[in-house]
Image (tube, rainbow, N blue to C red; front, side, top):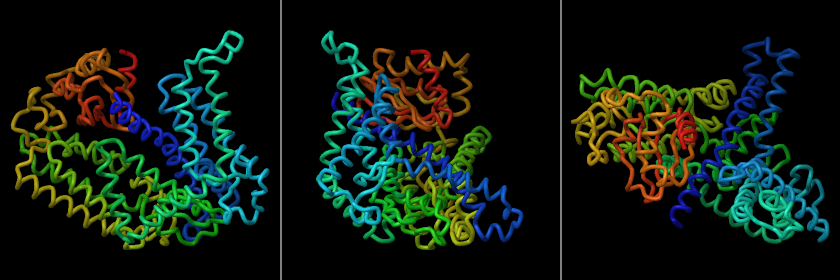
Length: 530
């Protein structure tokens, strides 16, 4: 049971990170467009942009987009309890905000009482900042993450508490914000004394990563891909993007921590003439060789190595996967085509992704944001001017397309890997599913016509061992995250018949089923059926 709780916890923590990150991604696009409209190079090419209305719109977009990174710690403090709590999620989110504010309010109180409050011109040197109008200890995004985790544990422990009759009004969910305010206030009192040494250790860890030089982006890019099948890549990504592990920089008088935060801060600062390459080396530019060129090359190799009679059947799956990868930066539909049937290829893919990060850094490309898709290339590369060196992505991408295409084609043919379209049998039996293709072929789908969505939900529930075997079901962007009493009870062949793209067994109790970007619809069907 401890293992179940632990794995379920980390899966949901990764999902919790995605709530503010998704908002940040959307706001980042607004900030990028607003910043691009005011870029001198673009205004020189398009003179009509230099008028009052366009400038007003550009400044408004930049202001709106800047909201994300300016308030990111508070967003994490609210999002984490919501994602982790099983019940009373709204109360958990409210308590997260209360706890975040009370912690920093108490820290301010102690700084004042101990005469440690820094003057406005020395905040950075004293490790202090202003949050929600309160001068406090600068914990960065980690402050919000810590608050969120503490609030979640308080919520889990006390949301069903029963107080004496005289205090019964404060029982249950109402007690959560109360105990949160008291607990976080006590923690806030200790912050001025306990956080500086913690911050020193974190900064040292960040400097250690950077000290690996050009290998830092390589290790990051490869590590993210290797963690992705387990759904734990969000944790690594959040540490690099939002904490000192991803670097620190003084931008417009404010100390900014984390690669993505640094990039957004520079994007919002009109005096920026060059984005920090030490920050962008962990961002979108590193993904682009693989996402825009490499994986489409792999898809073409899979198509060319498929049996001729099967190519027409797999063409749609490959094309939709390429579109999702290039346009949306969602790679799982392609990666899960070979993750299970050819794990060696996935390891090669992870190494090539890391090398893509390293090469983009060596070429001094400075394209930021998070997704590595075509939109990022245009908004944060092309529209920001030649200072980003976006044009170098093109020849690098051509090389990556050829590298992926020939590597995949040679390995698939040499080792006779059963990638999609090369299966010996069309339909896998229950005992064979571990060695069969992770994606059902068209024949499989045709033999398992689903009358309606209710039937699909019923099949999934039955394939998971029935209602009694299901502990919890959640989802991220492309996959169901399921906690079971026993994964040995599942019927993998039946799961595949529901058009899943793959099955990942994390432990005896934890399972993930990949459905692609429409997974939220499957989750809704299951919620209704359950």
